[in-house]
Each structure stands twice: as C-alpha cells, then as structure tokens.
Length: 149
Image (cartoon, rainbow, N blue to C red):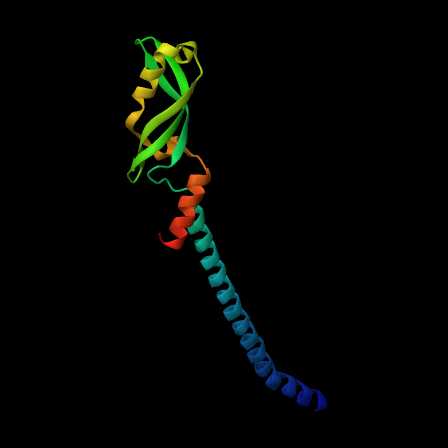
C-alpha cells in the first residue's frame, strides 16, 4: 500500500514538474529569439556601413586592372587604368581615364599614350570590373553621407 501511495504522489507531481520545465524552456526561447533579432539588426547595420564604404560616387577614383585593348587590328595588349567616375547607373559606371600603366611595348610608347587615354574617356564599364580606390576624398565622402550632407 505504501508503494502505491508513493507512486500516486509521484504521478500527480509529474505534470506540475513538466509544466515548470516547459515554462522555463518557453522563457529561454523568448530570450534567445530576442538575442537573434538584435544580432540580425547589428548584421544589417554592418552590411549598410560596408555598402556605403564600397559605394561608387561621382568623382571617386577606381582601378581597371588588365583592361584588354587591340591596336592596329593585330596588336593585343592590356593596361591598368586609373579612372574617375563621372556617372553611375545600377550596374555600370561611366569613367574617364586619368592615367594608365602599360604592360606591353605598344602601350609604353609615348606616342600612343593619348590614344590609350582617349579610348577610356566617358566610357561605360561594369562596376564589377572596377576596384574602388579608398583615398582621403573617398573617406571624406563617406563621412559626409553619414552626416546626411
């Protein structure tokens, strides 16, 4: 008889104990959900900051490495252009060449310099081909955008 009483007491307390365990788990899930939400917000803020740092703007400078050119329909060579952004679209930037470094005898010849620079004047290129130069003017532009100016 004593064993049956103990068994009945344990069985009657089991739902109460399970209720406390479920309540504790519910509180823990709410806390974890809140933490996940805060972390998602932080990630979103970081992504926005990163995008603003790597954003092209009119007047920014970029590099076009190993840009292929053909001269005289037979001489193929590459140059590394330093360009200035003069206009921006969704996927492309319009650039003007400021300077270049030649990787071939044709491009190193001074008489061809104006033609090579002239080719990259007001030319639309994919944003993916350009590497943004992070200089003082770019840092200044980022700060002005952060201030809303």
